[in-house]
Length: 188
Image (cartoon, rainbow, N blue to C red):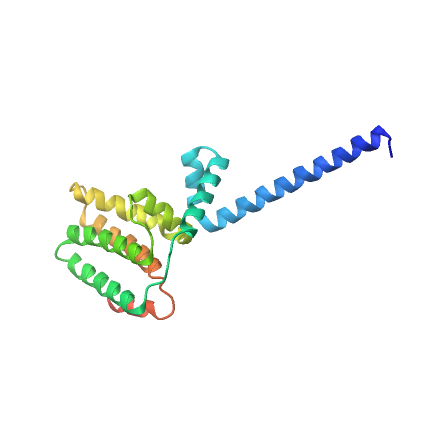
């Protein structure tokens, strides 16, 4: 057993197994992050220019949101938010620019009611990307249109698209499932 060749071979085998385990763990982590963050994953990679940095950021987002007290809305609050959304949609016909600004505000109020901090826009996007990745792009697009609207750079069709984007986010944040879609549909 004191043969140096056996010792070298054992060290090599241990090193190969360790590298294999490390690659497997990184691969599983990457798969988990891609599944959880969906389109946010490649966006983060593009932003940071590094898969490792992007994954670290996504992990940090997840850890940050896990420390928050995110909670479902009580039915009464959900009903109030749905009624407010219906009012915004109804006002869109007469004053689309104001309705878009109100939709943005209502989404922030909904996020706050659910327990999300409502700091700057990028922080809000990062927070909702953890549990609501499929609608993050809706939020970005709706918000971009809302900002363009404030500068008077939008058409009515742009504003209509913004409402659709905000509605997708709004419904997701309400966690619309079995009974909620009918209530939302009734107001469309």
